[in-house]
Amino acid sequence: MTLRLSGVTYRYAGARRNALDGVDLELAPGSVIGVVGPNEAGKSTLCLVASGLAPVVVAGSLGGSVTIDGRETVTMRPHELAQRCGILLQRPEAQLSGTAATVFEELAFGPRNLGLPLLSVVERVEASLATLDIAALADRDPTRLSGGQAQLVALAAILALRPAYLILDEPTSQLDPQGTRLVGDALRRLAAENRSAILVVEHKTALLDRLADRVVLIDEGRIVRGGPTVEVLDDPALAGHGVEPPPRVRVQAALAAAGLDDIGVTDQLLAELAS
Image 1: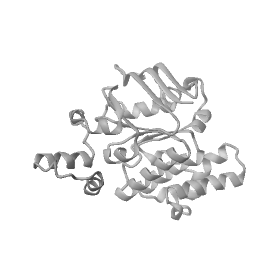
Image 2: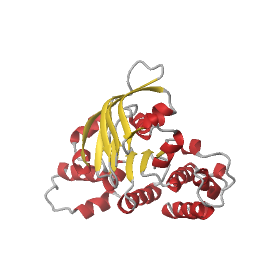
Image 3: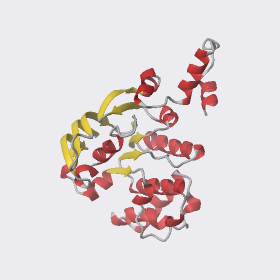
């Protein structure tokens, strides 16, 4: 079972050109695919289309095929999509329900709407809080959170629905390095232990360097490079597309420029230098 995009084009209503153009992508259980690219390259649109929000919720013209477990997303209702594919947008506060008095109730909102038994709802909420280490926020007012806290709560609310596929658009943009590592570790566990399939758009290539199995580079709506994470993130051409290489690559380049590339620096030391 997979999430698959085949020859996908997408044009927003009223736009003069395609935001996506001929995109092929496959997301299988247990895999993590990172997406990089310059601003306005089509990364957020890719998330909307892959999750089925576009064109089911976001108006536009879709070409090609987008399927989740063999079903075309355009034939699925929003609640069906939500159970199979969770999406975190760049503005997490916009995804909060606005009806919950506490973070605990916010995380329970989705599972309750699925009609789950109360004990199952509580178990899912507590598991999501634990996964992201935010149990201390359970009694907080969701409208009085910092940007980083709101980002973690919005992600936890998605995890409480336990979708097979996660589409994450800049999930750590408002988090400090510690929070970024926490999210990266949690996502890695979800992929390895729960066989979750994860598509993550990130400017923080250091996170993708640790997390993703594969990385694709998108520019002007097209996937122009794709492959194993190390191959793509080590490619010198990445900078030409407005993507900063991960610290590991920058450290290696600096050592080479100083004539020290033959001193036997280990991967572990490079990781420590880059952290």
